Image (spheres, rainbow, N blue to C red):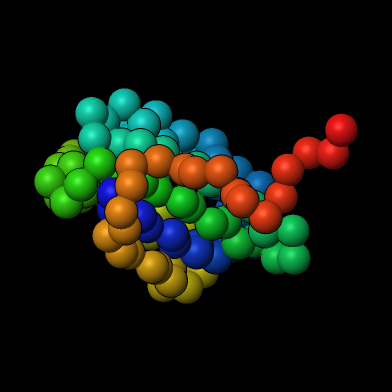
Length: 108
């Protein structure tokens, strides 16, 4: 699996509308055959920061994503929303999905 984590810092005036502006990019990416997950989270410490966690089946699926028209359109949209260059982690890991956390389970 290709695992990608990206931190985006939005311009303050764009932070509250970030998810609206990226909705089409998100929808199109989630519809890709090789996409496993594509999930946005907003920082509880910095309301201008969003973190995107992405998973793709393999390198070919990741390459198809980066080569897609909606990827290019998404970058164009986000370039007008960001306050700084995003930070990224991009790595290949074994497995194909989320697994259970062994150290924690519900009580009862």
